Length: 290
Image 1 (spheres, rainbow, N blue to C red):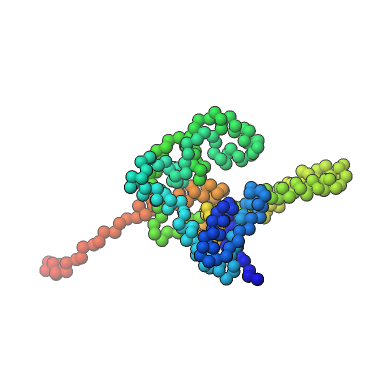
Image 2 (image 1 turned 90 degrees about the vertical axis):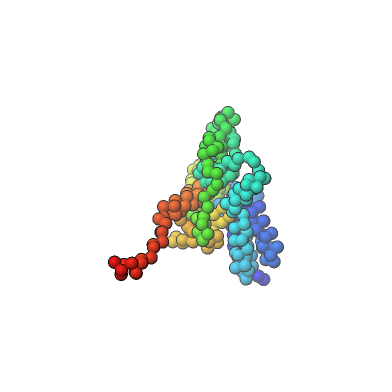
């Protein structure tokens, strides 16, 4: 029986299935393991949707997945859109986010997603008046930035030079929600099985303890949109996506804005580099004659 090894972890089962289909087209048997198919919200705390391949084909699968990722990165999509516009395929102006420079921008009413659903359902109830009657603004569905002027963003994204590594960041992930849920279930079962007068605090103490244990078990992962590879302390290059680890972000959405900041800083540094002008050769004959 062949041993299978996990080569990727995804937040969305659809992305995992697409990657599996891509590998199978190239003759590699792949399996998708979803830890919580009954509740997609628990997929991330459970470690994500795993893509497994035979151990003897790991190197080939890594190469194919890297090619697939390079073919679908956001900046390549932006270049294709720019080319279509230049050829006359689209006459409508493109609205780009001034923070992450991507095109996933929509003119809509409401709050940023991270604020609207951060404390659901209480937060959703408090945000309901803004969602129904608030003014429409531009919202980036990648970095969740909100702004008003559609012309504030750049016309084209800042590019990386050939040979520059893709910037990625450390993203801390902890199974706090899973610990909270397991603690609640354990406290409730113990409360049911023991006399109520001796266990009235168990339904409250166990979830708190589970949350604390889940937070203590957290670890850093790669912030790449299609990569959640664990990053041990001191690692400077992601072993899965080969991105250069250049910092830390607090959320997955912040990756896009931080990556754009790195690209802009690299571009600014190159613009400030002095251009060396070739020196004119000394004419020894004239010097000797003088």
